[in-house]
Image (tube, rainbow, N blue to C red):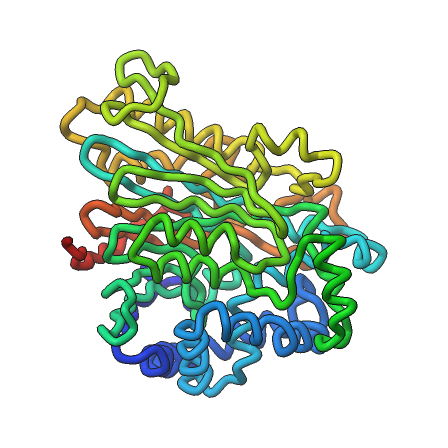
Length: 432
């Protein structure tokens, strides 16, 4: 157990996609192997033989077509970590595969789906000097206890035609859960649970009749990719508009929330479901009164989100789609973060902008601790009502703050309210 380390490793990789993956995998080999074994045997995921079939029959064919650069990088990670490719993809697909408990066909196999709860908080704040994204990443404490996250700084080759640098935070062996690139694009993500998350995959991936029936009934075109690869595809774009295209049209089978922004002063939030999405635009605030105002280039703005559907468009859709978030701090954490952002917008003088330190204080909020915006390790359940002998422990395993305008990111290990040290990474931004 290595939780005593104050910072997660910062790994810099260069070269071709395969070479970058090879460096990533070899540098973190033991950690990747530990995480792969943990997920392969975890009771929060389907049995391994089921996962293996989905990975080989659906994820790999879709990923090879959707993002061949990412697929080559995964192959490099697998070789470097001396770990089967299926396990590397399992690590990257952990989020998607835990959602199987939302599927109606799995409901009779489980007595409690509370372990699918996510409690992440994300936000974007736009002021007169910069665009910043922030994420408090809540997860099983296993990755914190064993130091299994990584800040990955990826330098691409000119031949690929990608942004020169992609900076991400993720679990070891992953291509990233949140991040920014040298073109000023950034992304953070939250889990969402809905009843339309799809797991009724045909046993035979070559069964074209079954695939057409699924497309007609569910609006899902097989094969599909894990959600994290749509995030990486966005960060592989030069253009914000093109990145949005890849987010919205990604071939997915589970729900999720994606908050994206660009240094050019725009931020958007997408509540994604397998066959559609809901769009949330920034709230613009009068810096003197705190009142919501119409969009303006002269106003500061923000977005916050957690792990339940909040789009006004969600309600009319509820006749066929329902939010399955089981409750908890998600129902108020985005509100707490919004209050902090409005206070910052109205209290910080125009011209100086809102600083990293200001945002650190906001994401360190302890209202309703331990289940707060900055969450201490806890079982998310009252001991007197639980029969579990060894309940899953969850916490804020990391916080990331991305300044998309100036190319600076800051990361801490564990809950930000108790962080003694922050890692600062600066990347060179591309100028046009």
